[in-house]
Image 1: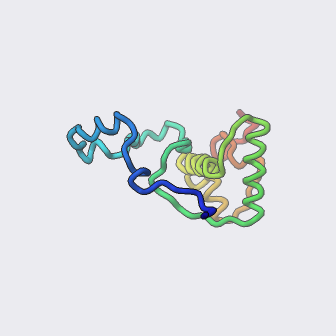
Image 2: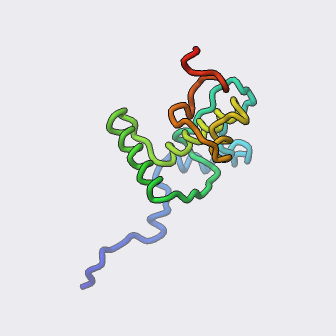
Image 3: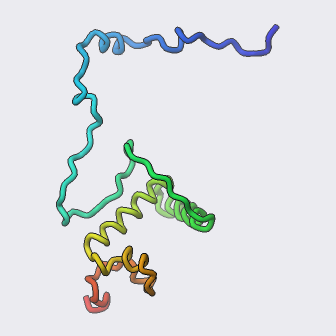
Length: 142
């Protein structure tokens, strides 16, 4: 006797199981436009705050290589978000939010943005990285 568990055949795995599926097969085929995933229209309103895309199916992918220290720091942040703030997020969500914050700062401040300054490798006051004050304005003068 074989010790392998009996597995169902392909016809059993791919058979229709719900009446809804059978009814849907009788309907006329939907147009390609109806089947296309629904994405919100991109608005060019610069006054709206930029947000990370959150939890949704994403149609584009990039690969980013990080150092071990950066990955460890991201994991610490993820665990702190979960433990201290009750936010169960994955690393991808953290990265998307971080990108949104940096791009919003770049759109708002341009040459004085954190992104430009860091890429130019200028000395940056870490405490004022993403301060909401206008460029050149001291946070204490508000």
